[in-house]
Image (cartoon, rainbow, N blue to C red; front, side):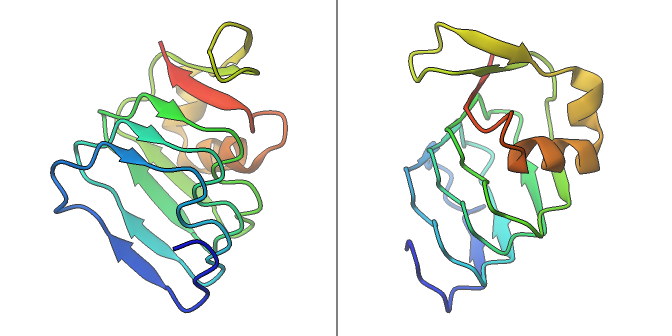
Length: 130
């Protein structure tokens, strides 16, 4: 669906066997403002939603990884809710060997701060729940 500029909403919540959203899956969907994730989702690939019009996202407790730049250039993203905000860290390699920063649970518990982190260049590397 990358660069599908007419796409405005995606409801994946009923896709109960969906565990992963691939790299660049919705990259460049600039009019995409709403996405609903299934409870089974465990990973979001790199650049999966970069340059989208998303305003808010809500992640299921099952989510354990977010690829690099997954939400970069989502300038309208002001709210990100994590069902489980504990144990997240940022790594600068896709093998998750070099931890660059821990993300405080209190920061991810705040939807505005969590959204800022998802958009922020400093936190744009690989996210993993430890």
